[in-house]
Picture (cartoon, rainbow, N blue to C red):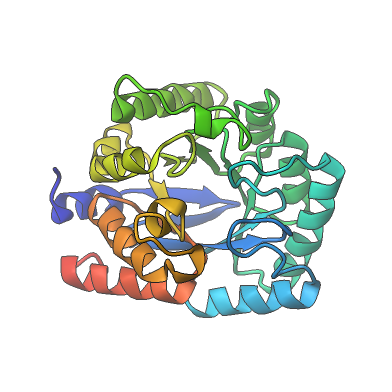
Length: 289
């Protein structure tokens, strides 16, 4: 396992070019989750108006979020499909409002649909976060190439309806790494350079596999790309603790700390203040500030 110092030195050299603004990842960054959906597993229905969207964005920015990740389609296991037009309607309202009122925010669009991604960037989004890594929409990677925005490529099998049945792996860490390596090669061939990798905790992985992957997370350093980790209030936490997502904040902070120790450079979270505290303490401990 790489030491904290080795991870710090490695990630000091990681940067993203986001619409002409160079973002250094020499210290951990936070991506705040903003689901404008009625059915997300934790915060569904909370941010269904421009007022609540802006209030939550202000709160997340105040507490240290670098990115605001807007999602209009629930990716929880078994989630129902919605028309593309409805997803675009949901995210357009949010992104337009955030871009107008918080121009300093880096807005990310959480979607696997290329036309939703395109609409989001036109409204002010500056990054695309695709849970399918371009597998669900063949046009996605060409759209990313044409838009020239950073792209988060995540490992998943199937879709939200089928992924829980697709958890058989020969070697989980190697299979995830091989998938991401192939995607990086494909993205580079299309002229896409600003790439962030996400191992996809909770997507086509059992609870035991999620913990195994977390323990071997530093292996992904071989891919030489910034690493985003999304563990916030997921079932691997609350089911292990025999509780519910509402009571999974302490567990989230614990696993986020481990993720940082293993080399994560971006934490995707519901609770920005608590994640900021984790990052500050981690940076103070390791000298990564």
